[in-house]
Amino acid sequence: MESLETWFRREVYHWRIGASVVWTVLSVPAFFTVYLLMACFVPLHPIQWISDVVFNLTSLSFWGTMVTVMIILGGVSVYNSTHFTVVADVPLTRLAALGRLVKVPSILHGAVFSLASGMIAWSCTGLIGDTYGKLSEKCSEESEKNCFNEKHVFVVCHGLLVGFMFHLLFRLQQENFVQFPLLQQAKFFQVKSNLWPMMEKSLLFNLKFVNVLFYLLYFLLGHIPRHWFLRNLYLEARPEPALNTIFGMMDLGLLWQVTLSGTLVHALLSYATFLFKVYNTEPFVFPVETMYEEYKNKCLHNALGCSQFPLVKYLGFLDLHLLTKHTPNRRRQLFTLSQPGGHPHNWNSVYRACILEIDSLTKSLEENNWKAFAAPPLNNSSGDNSSKGALGVSSLTFRGSGPSVTDTSSIKQQQNPPQEDPLKKLFDTLKKKPVLKYMLGDLPEASAHRLFSTAQTQIWAIQALAAIVANSYSEDLYGVVQKSLPDILRSLLNLQENVEKHFKLAPVVGRRAQNSCAPSDIGLRHSLRTSLKMSLYRIINTFGSHLSEIKLAPEHGKRLKFFMDYKE
Image (cartoon, rainbow, N blue to C red):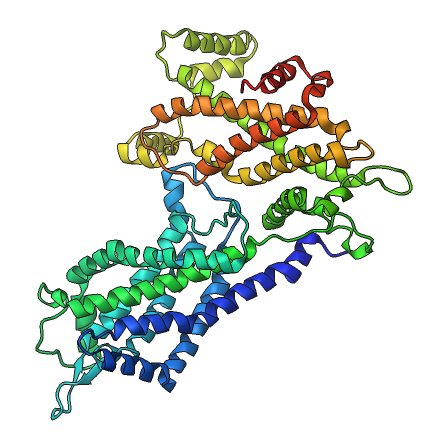
């Protein structure tokens, strides 16, 4: 029987990638039409401006350029699809964060994007006239010598830098992280609401970062490509000032063109990335149960436990979350009993997957909270009572383990202690240097950021369980869900207690941190906290005082009483 991961890749994932690439490619003429309207803009001659744009749009060279850009952008989109992930990669040290940039896949990714961006910028130069469209041209109508067109190289090199900067931000800001939207919308409305902000972001990105950096680099290093082309292609230099001079960089027309081409390149790459995320975060309906043998391992509970392909797991929990809210017919399938036997297999499978997901986060939170709580005493002075206690434990651990009288090897080892490894000693010495200490030191709350990087599945599991329990009050004819209510309450209360401890300890950790960052999981933390309280109150509002009759551990019963009294 074919595995769920293999089937999903072939039947769903590859089709979604193909759809995003096709729509990206089909949108290229629209982007270039807007680009031509801006690049050929002549405010004093509007009729000539419109006629030039119409002539370009109806020419064979324009559509030849479109085919070239479509092929480039389609290839880049397919290649880039292998670099996305639904699980954020959170580095623990600054060195690890920078180390991601020097790995072979990252270097190849940067080279591909730089080359593709340069080729798209080169395609743009062919649409805006001879001033930028050719590498060389006649020095004059009477002369047979060819002069070097530095503006052409300037625009293409600017495109190369745009692609490289896009690659850097793609890695450093984790643009490859596929985050599911809070509100599920149709693809058309997602594109419509994000298209204009995306264009604004691309324009500001070029004006604030790329243009400033490129002009500085070209001012310092622009003579290198200029001299190379003049020497190797036997071209003549124009009498006008070179572009790596103050007067050459004051060309406002050139600034306008590189800004437009850079914005176009960045917008096309961003649009391809955005469409990939839109298509792959679209909900997918997994069957709760099936009668077909080949689909027995492709049901909802199989998706909830899929660890080989995390996207399947995320889509499974999203489907469960939407199932409990909007599809009562599918929800009733969770309450059915098997025939023959009368066992709630559907509910048991889904329930175990949700509880396992919640308890795994609870366990990780307990360990993280303990480390955060235990960190301050370890940094105290040697006169602190906690330090004395630690020393006492250490002495008890090694007390009585010394060598005996007849243990000559141990006595000899004490008389001649082993030499310390020089490489280890050198590494420890270098580690104390300020720069290396800064690079090798842990990022503030890095472990906590990694902890909540997968909290989206727990949020969906919590909301789904609460919705199922609340609806079971009127829909569960056999009481299959209410039998699991004590375990559900225990898991939710345990997680809620550890989340509250984390929020209380987080300010302490933040004050100890020398630097702060803005992690992508902050929103998930607060969403998890809110979802927990809402879910518990939803269960309480449904069952009311009957919950007090459920047998729970004393600490769980006490916390549940706080919620029942609306004191939390």
